Image 1 (tube, rainbow, N blue to C red):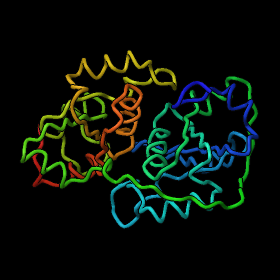
Image 2 (cartoon, rainbow, N blue to C red):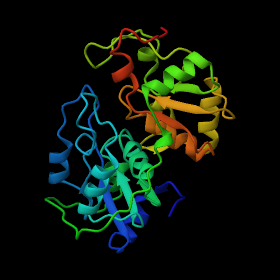
Image 3 (cartoon, rainbow, N blue to C red):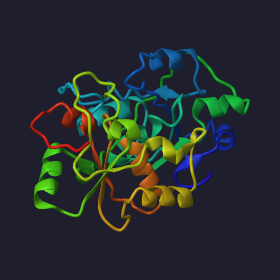
Image 4 (spheres, one colour):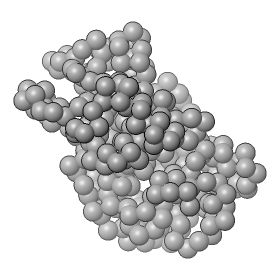
Amino acid sequence: MKNEYFVSPQWLNEHLHDENIVIIDASAPMPTQSIDYHQLWLDKHIPGAQFFNLDKVANLQTNLPHMLPEPEVFRQTASKMGISENHLVVIYDQGNMFSAPRAWWTFKIFGTRNIRILEGGLQGWQQAGYPTESGEVIRSPEIFNIQFTPEKVCAQAQILDALHNKTPIQFVDARAEDRFQAKVPEPRPGLRMGHLPGAKNVPWTTLIDNGSYKSAEEITAIFSAQGVDLNHPIMTSCGSGMTAAVLVLGLDMIGHKEAGLYDGSWAEWGADDSLPLEK
């Protein structure tokens, strides 16, 4: 095992049939994509991997995309998938580390004790020459005991409170620089252009190199170069709460383990003309 965050394709292949390991494909499309990742998973996945649909295991009572589900919804889903809080959950996506960190964050928020992400994702697995399979995957049900940490899930009211009271929390936005600086329209229709007042910009792609995270030293340097003070509280955001988790994982890797995530992100903030922004 590489470390407390990642496993290599070689390690996973050697431990593919360990009883305590559950493999999850958490692929999700970018807002400009109409890719059916569930169908792609049915067509080809790592042996034994189940599909974790971030858009369906979500709060479906809101029109915001893939918001964190209620604890009971997650508990029922994980239990049905044969996952307990004590299993080693190995997560991958079919892209470039776009959605696997969001699934990592979700499982972690609800109390999973052992989580790893497969470096390189499905593409890295295949490039290493390891087998895939197709079709449904069913495991025997387990009991998942929730240990929810809601304090790491930020809501709009907390942002407003931080802005009004000028608390030392730092907003760090994972969107591309052109979107952050309001140079290009948002991919989701109807959203304003700009960013949270005072926010720093660390595009999520700057932390990733060929489907893997850069080193802790490089990640530290990237945040510092963007003016982020790693000694003060941080709350991450993005377009919809997906790639904000890429930053949360990167921060966790460099010892900043208490970062919050604004789940509504710009999909919520950018849709409300009454909320302040900067360009």
